[in-house]
Image 1 (cartoon, rainbow, N blue to C red):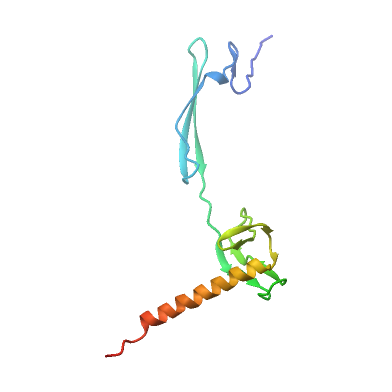
Image 2: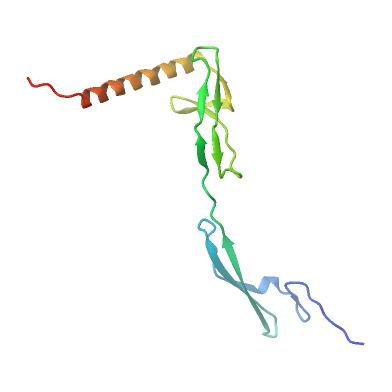
Length: 150
């Protein structure tokens, strides 16, 4: 009768489990696409070694591309419900989109998702935005209008 030892990975017939003695050389940068070689060397107590090299491939993730622009609809008056549509995106299989409503550039607590009921404070913020936009347009018009000789 012949005995055959069929070790599991990380084991040998003399030492048993040698996974704590496996040395790994090479590095993988998961932030950069590319192929990275890792070499594994296992050594038992008698000095026998086993070596294997594996290639790890890091694939780049495509950034989502907007094909239909996001938009906000609804009446801009206190008490009205505004609705945010996130638009349409390609290459967004693993991306989750959600709306975060802002007031004066800061997130409104609890105002997540597509619908938001406009409050008086929100109406005031919209008016400030409109006023600022009008001021900027006036400045642009002044800067770009033809000059008149004195």
